[in-house]
Image (cartoon, rainbow, N blue to C red; front, side, top):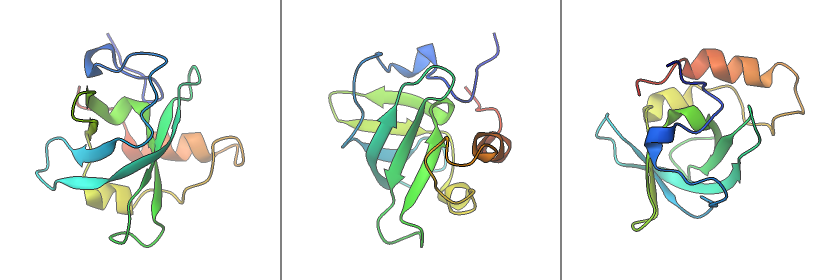
Length: 117
């Protein structure tokens, strides 16, 4: 079964209707640790994403990640694990809310590609 980059994976443990705002974000496989904190979360069908406040380690301070890069949600610890590295996030297209730029979703899809899950 193919996983859509703009949808939460059933295996991630995310429960629809549960806000992820305020959860910490960590790199699941790279061992790089904390990436930031979720400041915005959308569950729009075909356009689900999180916006991560990355703090000081990245110049833009906010990064949009498609929901498909989420590998696991630990609701008890309030941590979301993602299948991408800090470098990949740093090199992502500039953050802008989806809908402002009609090509933004396509750019993010190409950048993050198909997740490993």
